[in-house]
Length: 195
Image 1 (spheres, one colour):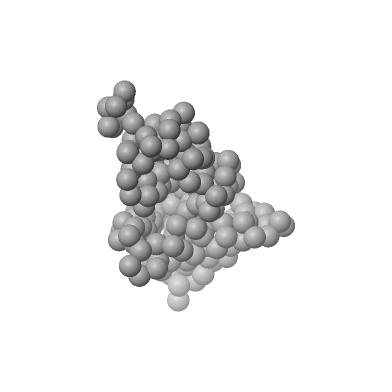
Image 2 (cartoon, rainbow, N blue to C red):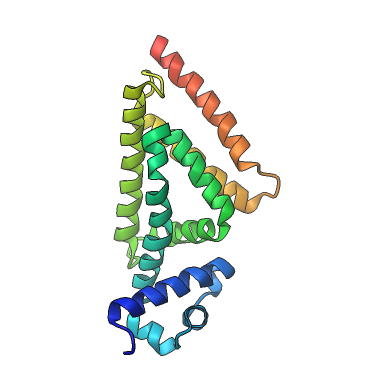
């Protein structure tokens, strides 16, 4: 190989991200990835002989990279600001949202080769949100009545639901809808604190 194995895999993943940016989840295959990476299809297959491992590598780079890059917002301004920034990132890169939702659906199928990895990633992300909300309550950014676990369920459902709506409805104003819903959630959380 002209490149080391690690370099070749990195080029393939970079090409796959680019291919998914410009193509639909179901239309991207070895040829599209090879073209975007400036490689041959044989190079792609040699680097990732199992397709699902390539998809895992793509999601790890693209989705987890975005998540890690934005986590400092959660640390500084809270989980609500972090999820809002993730929604904005999804608006900036709708192909990532489409890929993530398609893969979550596929990976939820029992027996799917990547089911365990995707479930573990999802659980880890949810626990990060819960822990971040715990910090927000302690720091006074969120009401002491907010149960971090229940608030995480609500916020993750809102985040994912709005992304899905934005994919399927042309009139969805994601950030405004998020802000309005969070304001109502916070009223409920503060009511619990005084009850």
